Length: 396
Image 1 (spheres, rainbow, N blue to C red):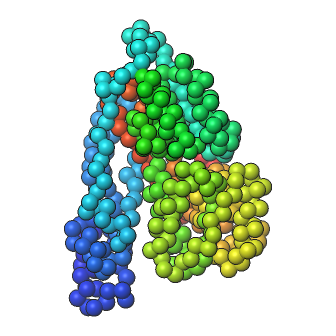
Image 2: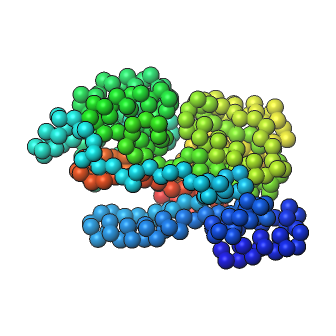
Image 3: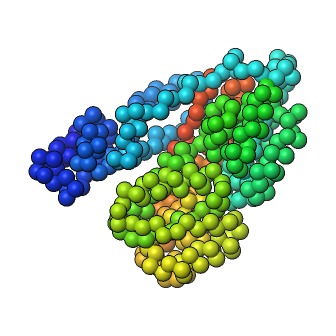
């Protein structure tokens, strides 16, 4: 990191700004100013303060008898477009929330006082998609390890009305709710009503920060979109035409990821986004949507797949059309087909968002809260897998 300001300084002293490009690491004051001035094109933050905090926090958790695992502190990419976030950061929310500051329903208070088991519901936005079993596995692990009653629920298909109706039906049985909303706008009023009824609500997988939810457990979706966009730009060498695939244009997770991806790709002037393809959720429809987009844009050299379910279809299209190495694919998650496609070279990179951990922490945070502990947002991190390291998860 100490060499980074020196590189920017050399570019400035030698009148090479814009001619010699600089990409570096960390957010030293000199580096920030050089990014603002355009002498450094991008710098990568590795969250050193968080590293220091988590180094201590993990040991404290371990010595307190808790299970700990590797914690990815994430990557922040800063360019002229977003460097002001460092100089003028958005105020952080309160450090944490505690049941003492929450108007817990009397029936739940009585159950806690009597030592009765509490009922936690984990509502996922589409239990039929290929990501859902990983979330469910985390919930089941929480049931086993934490000894709680928890149920994995949610609509079949991304159906906001269905998700609302199911939760309303279960309200009288519910002592805590973890929710990944089909639509943040549609579900926010329901989350507010649930908390007003004295039932604690946290969000996972997809946040709903404008609601009365307590905290969020999951990946920063905009940031993971930025990571994917950066990877796409890198594997294309900064040149080419890209299509972006999402499952549902109205889904918040699609909106957030695409926002981040477009921000990152904007830093590559030689890359053109020619189309966003909304594929739906049926595997055959996903493949057909990608195929139609590629037929309509035969000069596309990159497919940026922002969903778990569309990544295998993109890799399959590349394989079937003898375009491995010609059309680059960056996608999401570690479905078995995706892992194999990375091994085969049909998918250049895939981003893991730790779904099992999301399911586990969705339950764990509510248990901690109801036990009187202070809870705060929990970032499950970003894992990037390429041919170089996919062997770490293959067959696991």
